[in-house]
Length: 366
Image (tube, rainbow, N blue to C red):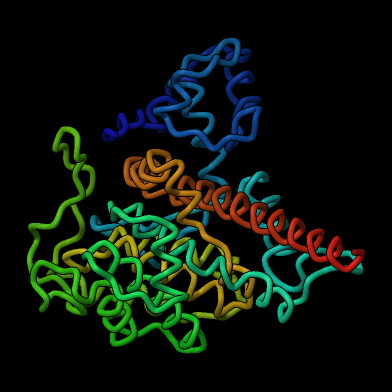
């Protein structure tokens, strides 16, 4: 993975195109859309390699795209480390996925008479509870297996390695966020969550449940050592986290309302961006996603593993973070990535439930 190329300045390209002939200006505005013709929310690093609209250069097409996004973007109270607000928009493709998730990530599993209710779903899906703890640990480099994860979680097998303990800790963290999904997000809640996630796995045990106090934490590319992300200064973390807590706990439905699943994804991103801990930030970030989604009534997500999908496309997951940072703190890149991830995870679970229902029906016929 590498840091994306810095996008060209939108305003410079816009000023230049307005000095062109009327046909060129018309072509520019005809191609001023937030997504490409396939509905993709492309970063400059992707767009510049796509076939260009007739009459426009790559820089001009990018300026047209950015203009369309700028018009529909909404600023958040959350700010990047330079003091600029994070922004996002909801292109049509994202709205369609959110509609799917609203229909399929809560309520009943299926819309027909044989739909599985929340109660029945829990009976069917208990075994799937091991998938997210396993996959979330796998993303962070833990060397273990699904079979061992199930033994740890369902059979009471004691962990024999640090990696196995990481899996068990992740399961306990999921249990914690379920138990306290009605709570507001506060510092003590976050510290306890981190303590659960990292207990017994930190180089310095004192770092579990403690905000980092120095700035020697960086996200680097393991293959070449390139710095991919330099988190905000440790001295700013308590103030920045308070802003994050206010954002998470604001359930008002006024002008600044954010779709619950988008907000859950934003919490995921922001915790990883702030990187408030020496280690375990990714696992805590994904646990926070579940905490907020469950808090908002998306009960099915208790049995859905986003990490299993992320693990299959780790590069795209990582690049979505980098795209946000390199393009004016536009969270839409990450939101689109995670919306697609969640949709795929929910579809897999529905397929699993349908398969189990048919198996049960087959046994009843016999």
